[in-house]
Amino acid sequence: MNLLVHRGEGDYCVRPDTTLEREATDFYVPDGCLEVEVHKCIWSRIIKAGKAVGPKFVGRYIESFAEGYLLYCNGSPWVDGSSILMRNVRPLDEKASASLAEALVGISKRTSIRIGDILIVEEPQGVTLRKGDSFECISLR
Image 1 (spheres, rainbow, N blue to C red):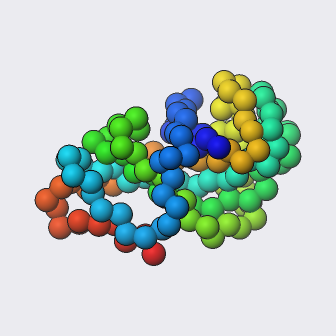
Image 2: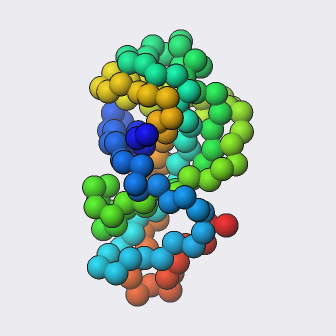
């Protein structure tokens, strides 16, 4: 399983499933990390494998969504990133469907998608927490 992240205008990255935090509990800023950038996101689990998915076929690949958070240590998606995905899954609405459809079409042009992959659409504006701020943890309950 991969985490397929759409970060904005044609910007995509793939995170390994090892960045997935299994429990949505408090997150503590790790030692050696000067700041953590937190972005809200929506996500959906891929239910059918495919490649180069066309816009009118997106409904065959995703059917529900939920919210979560992507964390970047020192602002880099490649170093010490964590993915916290909430489990309050609900049926697709129009806004979530449009965002996830755009991401799925773009990502599937570049790589194959598999059953069980998680498609994530990140909001562009995040919040930065720095070591030493009064925020030592982010409550995710």
